[in-house]
Length: 519
Image (tube, rainbow, N blue to C red; front, side):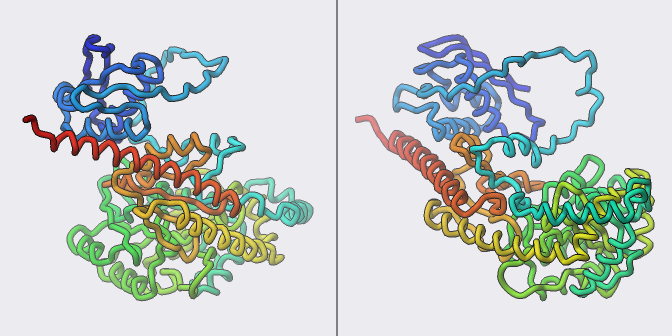
């Protein structure tokens, strides 16, 4: 922990900055955040002078560039400005947030921080409730189905039918491996895409997150290494990149997982598992082509490393020809296939499944029994009835049309309102668009300004297990209509352009000052 405190001098009041060098938050961000809080609290007022970059860097024991980056963030926010020959001064005060009437601080008698593990807090789902409750907020933060498209009456009828037919049995404890008719249905549906498994090779779970956790429990021992994509689904990072698991990250390019890098890793290190999202990858949206899929399966077979195939977005294709899942190409029995109804149906029901060889399913089932006995039988039976009456297929078709329109509306708005320095791809399916911003922009800092304008999104750094790229963002397009999408992208583009202009202005002033000579 480092601290800087200096007395008032020439308009400068006491300034205290503490740095946690073990935190996952970059040092420059810690500095910027604490200075921003000092301004918000009134500890720093308009006109107060901040320490010079070199002086603060020496006091805190950091590189001068770290302080420069922090000051750049504050300048881009319009909170400070630099005057050549005079110094850096507070130029604005952010709007204060109203305090809750019953807000109070209570001392805890239990030292929980000493008892709990020191792992990084999972932030990828934080703030969801707040984003949902803000009526004026337009959210691009989550890749979730549009609630207004839910066929509530159709699903209510399915619930009524199964309750009338077998309600007492469904409200009792059931088989831990799942509701048998649903297992049979899933096996038949997967056969249509080339995956040939029996019902006893299907385990019903509480969604893909539990599926990943169960696979981790039975196949990964402390000290084992797992190969994961970078960037990737944050839920996979939370499972496979904990304190007791080593991991190696494989970059994701325009064709998906970089198989050249993976091949080198497999030859040198032999990881325990490979995790991948080959169709409409989360978060980049890219899809692995057929040749790459075949090569991945052959590589895994050569080095005898199982693959976890996460196909949760597979049904949401809007353009191009359908591609077979990895498991349909698997002649060796090495692919563990996971999927869920969360993206195509109802995420709140928490019903997913794993398809794998019987010996793997047996061990997964035992692990599930130790965890929660079984997924909700009522939810499983209702979904099974819903699918068997053709209602899920009808709902997916309707959703595809709506999501394709929303994707296209977002792409058009990005072209219209985003700066030319930004870039993005056109995903053939899925629920989000991956945007690369100019390198000077930190998306996490940008989110604070965007939220003030009624727009939220997912900063790209949440999707990286290592080497996070701060100038990236994922924009989910499914939860807002085309008109809302255009308005939100317009607001977001204006925030980005203003921030870029402030940064460019600040840097041009700095370059001009550096280029001056005394005569």
